[in-house]
Length: 141
Image (tube, rainbow, N blue to C red; front, side):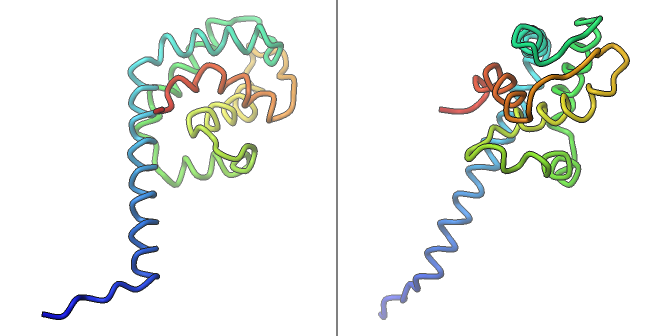
């Protein structure tokens, strides 16, 4: 019986598909954890944003509720909508946390126009670093 030949492109394709599957599983797990712990994460995140001077608000509770709502619906968001939201900040850091990128865009695009937010300070990277300092706990080791 002849041994099947394995081409370089075939093994490369298998490797790429395996990496993509692993990343997709990690992303789903992070989204589920974000939903399951939305209350605690939202409280910590809003407090960090205020402490770092990224957000100035008249009502931290209203901002916390918005962040919590975004965290809870993250697992059900359509892939197209997620990619559209992440497009402006996709290249912000080399190995981004998808949840942190999403919430960075929520702060930069959505909260900046919220009536309870006085102002949002800092560049996109500053906002991402503040958000990721809390949400990096969701990332699998």
